[in-house]
Image (cartoon, rainbow, N blue to C red; front, side):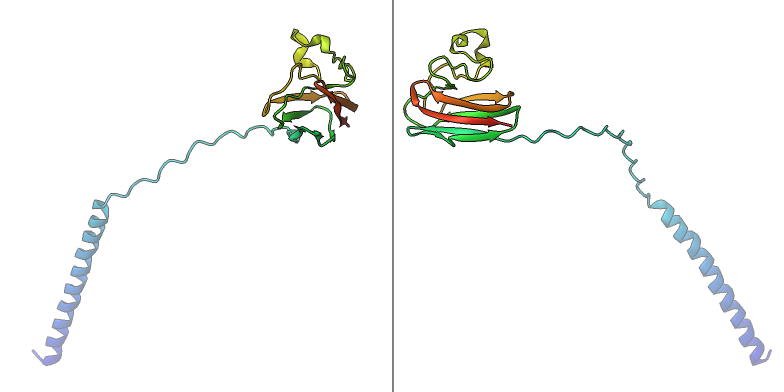
Length: 164
């Protein structure tokens, strides 16, 4: 055999060995990939039904009047119909906010001191009692107009709520 035939023979054997090794490696790699379990993707959450559009809520304002020894602050307050006003006593002396005029409290529609102590007391612009320091009276003004009020225990103190 000559040298070129021997070289050719070894080349063919080398190619066959390389090809055989490559084929052996591929199944082993595939087998090792199959042996490593892959975590399944978590299921997608169920689709939530769309909620109907909510109607716009009216803007709510916090309206308050502070009661001091020198009177109501602010003395005039402007609000929209349907808004609530809180009268808060910051004085050490009792104060009784109520619709004008003293002593009947009838200026605001439906209000009357005679309704204090009855089932209608919660519907009138009248605290129906003196408020101690830190105590509050809340009233929702539904009637448009300019409504004067006073301190029933000190009628020289007064204020106005303008309802637009």
